[in-house]
Image 1 (tube, rainbow, N blue to C red):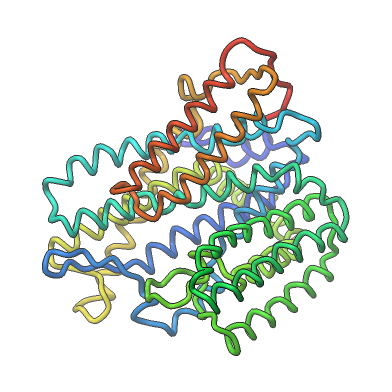
Image 2 (cartoon, helix red, strand yellow):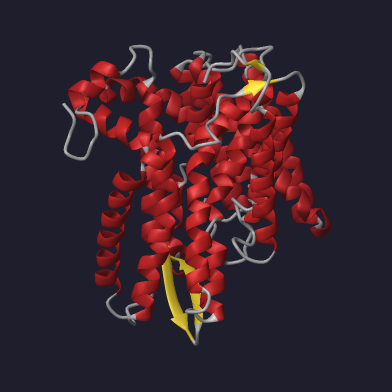
Length: 436
């Protein structure tokens, strides 16, 4: 039975779910996503002073909350679940670029609408807002797209990740990435000239992906995973207590050493801890996910995961701007902080829920041209894959500026690379047998 909102009912959805589907991965993914949205909503603060929008973070004013970020920094779980889910679709010897295009098709489908929205919104807002209010808004607009850039680069490494077939290979892979990040951190912390090397630490997202592959293949026993999590947690604590790393696992904007931009050794350890704990908890989560209501929430949520991820930022910015303009800024030290926080939370949850229902189709319904049948002539798949890598890298660079200044050039590169990749795989050729 279909519900009033157009979603299938719990019993119908449970009956339609393949027996072999790993429900734990879906629960992890949507739980992590809800955590990200809730974290952004709770932590974001803003105020307009002298015509300047100050977009800040509660951690800047309340450092005591930094410890909570070790619980709420759950991005590694996306890469863990994503790699585990994608593993079964990769066939060794298959067309790498074609496979990557298939994985990227749904990922980027709603992004075109998102960029279109911001193009219109910023065109309207530019003459209406003071310059130093408009520019922060334009800068924040696409910051969350960093995840797509990093995820594309991780997916591109699937031929390498798929070679993790033993616990020994997992150990070698994780140790290599963790050790490389350690070396880079030593270099950049002792000589500012090496600071740009920090962005090579984006390889940190390969760590949860490797654990995701290991989970899918049952390479780690739960007791071993628990021991790994405990050991790395102790190392992380030592890095904070005796090392140069700050406690917060998310960016605070206080110009101290960030653990996320670029990623640090502490974040690498955190990714190992979360991934190992995910392996430990998976059987319990799976049993829980077989409850019809739980599975319904997880499945429906995942059907619009990108909708939740993308559109909560415009809603959050809009609510903050509205309150700031009315003189009800949510900023530490200002009157009625708690009341305003509750009001904003209610508004954001309501608006995001409504947008989820209305816009979910944008990531599920075929987009003309973009979703044309994929065909590949010899050599085209590789070139298309390389263009997708360009799009991923440009996405990571674009978030530095947002939709202004050099960020506009980066977005143009993203769109050109995606268009080129799509065109290369459209037209006469031999249809690929790579599964979706």
